[in-house]
Length: 363
Image (cartoon, rainbow, N blue to C red):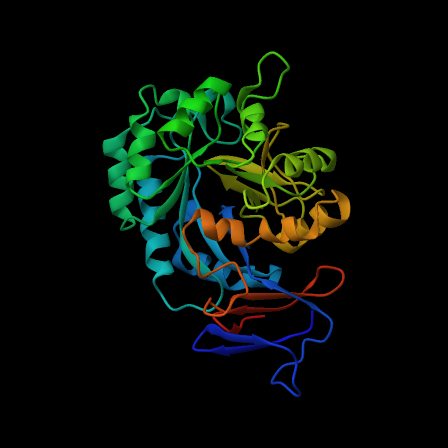
């Protein structure tokens, strides 16, 4: 519905019926909460693991072109010294007053994963959960790890899961060989989410429901989903969204270094040569192993609504408010008085017209 938004000091101070002229008339475009991508590795020739300050700043600025106002810089399994440098770099940049989207922290994907479901994660660096080592990683970024993807079947007594929750880190089940029962135990110990549901986890079988069956059967548990229609077919996207409560689905991009680059680009991901295909998918070179996507959040939203037929409100929530709630960021991801003025404006084709971060026009 038409409305006036009044913004002061980076926040929405009032939402009211249109009463006349305003500073910026957005016409009939859609005004939405800014997108929040909680699982993205990089873009525009940069990867979180590269630990280059200028690369992260470029990513932070350009990601607003797809309507993203906040994100988590996401690592991939690697050698310890690489991960420590990546964490320190992300922590440094997130505390600077740079143009572009907010970096809300780090999504630490690995190294505590299943080798059987490693996907593009380098096998040589995958390790069992280690609380003392995790403390080193946390200290390197001043406790700004917000989500940690791990394989719960490797956490035999649940102590690692409980440790994460006690330290305000979201334990997210992913890259896992977990049974349905393993996932149940993990949730009882504090697991809160599922990482890129369907990908790199035990599949649904009518006699072995696996991690996928668990994700679909827990309507009230947060679950990520890559919405490029390649990682997960549009018909399966329909099944997923029908299985989840409106406030528990999390659209992600799982985007890589190659987002914004030309097909055929070869780059390194987790120490492995990776190539960008014409479809926008990235593959470990010489294999059929998908490394990740180059999806943009506005395109993901269009896919959900136009291709998968996901209800409009549920699709919008899955791109913003649900992520904010998972992270405890209750003043982001929604257009309400008192909240940060993080706003995405789309036209009828879901192309980004403008992006505002804290009320400041970024694109």
